Length: 248
Ligand SMILES: Nc1ncnc2c1ncn2[C@@H]1O[C@H](COP(=O)(O)OP(=O)(O)OP(=O)(O)O)[C@@H](O)[C@H]1O
Ligand SMILES: [Mg+2]
Image (cartoon, rainbow, N blue to C red):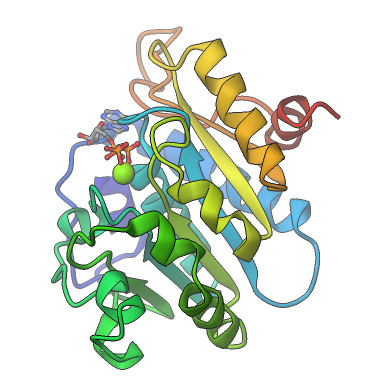
């Protein structure tokens, strides 16, 4: 994700060292995320805070990496962005952003920490992060509980975007439990990894939970030309993908 450090100029206090993209693909990736950003703005045109879940059908499809890219790209517009790591089973955000992992969401929801203790400054502009915290025994119950609903309601006035990183839909019920506090869901699929059956199953489960599918980010797209689009690009029309996924 070196491109994001470049995008943030030298103002960013952290450098993400995770090698997700190559140096050469920087421009394509930056443009891809700007496209996603624009489409997200248009797919949720209502005023006020936009609360978006990022998820996928199976593990390791690029949810955590993609949500960080998306959060940083939104923060570049001076939007107030909060990223919450709601994957309390395999938390990754604090590792990628090199932040302290606890206290985090689990401590807050369990009544063991106050909001100022768990909300961390993620760098420039108004980009904040709530990390996942200690692995709790009951993540789905915590996410489905009143405390989570109240937390999101209390933060709506303070942020333009609340992005929630989540576990894979087909593996645990945590993400479905969050659907009610969100405006919509961005799905991640990984080229060559995600299969149609798993993806469709995840979409059906989300629709059953009344979630609105906003679109799809196709991760790790392989180059057709052998050069500039090496590892990672946004592919396809975000809205069209969303409509296809939701059957519209
Ligand atoms: N486009 C990409 N190119 C190369 N590596 C990638 C890409 N996207 C993700 N990865 C790598 O794949 C691994 C999984 O990515 P990530 O943690 O973002 O996925 P995830 O869907 O959040 O996983 P989990 O289900 O475990 O939460 C990481 O090691 C990450 O660096
Ligand atoms: Mg993850």
